[in-house]
Length: 312
Image 1 (spheres, helix red, strand yellow):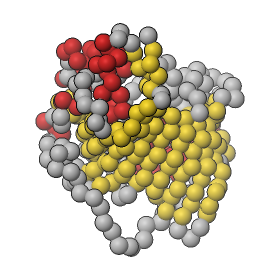
Image 2 (cartoon, rainbow, N blue to C red):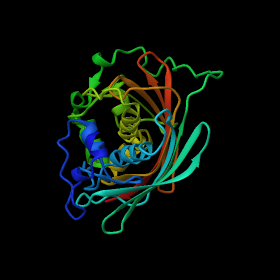
Image 3 (cartoon, rainbow, N blue to C red):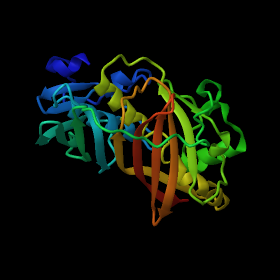
């Protein structure tokens, strides 16, 4: 984005960032350059808990790191710890430190903080120059929905009724359309309360509504943003009915997140997330996602540990 090369475009440090209009992910992830290794957010997306949406933090952390590596190196992994919820009234500063600068790999440390001194996240990201090498990939499972046309699958706002209302009440997951994201459910039953506790599963198609252009670093950052959207639903869906019967709710928040990029991808083309949760206990749950292109190629993997805090 243009403001990455123009300090004059940066909002004053003390001003609250403007609310994002919800349409173009490129605008949300845009960063102002403070120095060669210091970038600042320009707008904010607020989540259901009144904090900055974790996907924005993931995407901007990766995007900031990518601005400091040679142009022939693309993102291959990121591990991020969410330290504290981002305050929507303050911009986020991303400070980058070099860990490795080798013949093929670059590694960066990212520390994100706000003007009050609040540490928002701590992350490491690696980038690599592609080389010819042996290759293999796990095929998309026959039951993951890869054979279902995403255009013909149900939208979130198509799913209603008592089950959707129960989920909104217990989890604060909203069954409504997102201006920037097109998400489809190949199996509507994945969105129903009362699922089995035996490795719960959530499958969904997702893409950005607007074309992002051809900047591969921006597509990787946008994928990081998308990877925080509904992935941990697999962790908590099986507990909705029991919590609802008690008249209780679950506070769900991301704790840490990891991404591995296996092959080139576009965030503005359909991607299929096949998410499972092998464990939930002691206030924490784990989600694991394999991500496939529309053609069935395994393009990325992601994991997220989330907080499961019962409430009244």
